[in-house]
Image (cartoon, rainbow, N blue to C red; front, side, top):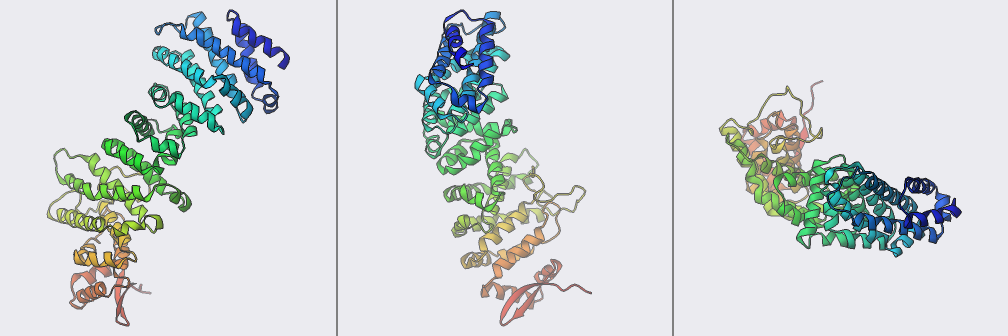
Length: 480
């Protein structure tokens, strides 16, 4: 086959296009699937394959932007272009010499020129046009794998404008393949550049939007989690310009990432980004208070606050990388103050923050994503307070000064809107009392006076025990 392919390719590049030429390219595409065959392909054959694509490009560029893709001669031209892209795609699989030969010939630049024209022809929704676009993108993906020079050329020639046009096409496969190429080409340097100008940022936000609108396209999520989240500058820039709906998509991805193994957690999400999210929470946390109004409240703004709280809870759950958040006194103060406000609102009127006892719908943390911003909100405020006080004496004192201890004890009633609130309250009280004599004295004073707080602790299944001048929180002994 090797001896006959060169003359056949030469014919395609020079003669009138026929279905016989299409068959020749299809046979060539199949042969290139074989590893041993690819390794034996001579450089002049690859050059002739590029010559075929060049000839097809001339034919495509001569077309008017408004054509009938079903017309016989045009249909053949598009099928030949598709097959030529397929052949080049297969030829590049794990074959650096062929990648380099095609790059040196100018195949990357030529492919983008063809894709630009095909995008203009795609308005009619022709399968022949979309097949050619898909295979052209796949070729770019394969020539980029393991080849930094090709990656850089693709980025320089296609980003951001051509990639934006491809991502904007109404074809899920085109979008998926385009994101595959972007993921392959992206690196730390390119990711940092995404925040530098409006057009690049526009593409980045488009990818984030696709995470929401096309959830089955895994490449968008991989770009966001493996590249975007590593850049505080990019995420901060995007977040600032996003709508609340877009922010929720980003925060959901971040929260899902934090729910993976410890090693993966530490590899992404810089501390500077965590600091930014903490600031967003402290600055806008009172948006949840609008939920008590019967008028049209901005549920999405409240949902953003709820997701920020969830993320901060995960970040401060004994993850050393993020425990610097404990030193933000504004974060602790805002959390305690917000708990006070929602607690008072829930007691003074009937609203979403009022303790509920409707267990007709089982709600468990971790079982899917809550879509109501008030679900588990109070329990997570208490959880965050407990996290921020763990081994941190200044924060322990701060909670006492803000009257937060009694507040937490008063938020231990069974509440179907806040599963496990009692458990989080026990966790928080334990962290607030640990190695803190002043806080222990406060609890002792409440206990000595016989006030309700000791009763609340007992209802939670715990008792306060004095030992060597210190107070310890112990579980109640069960009756035999």
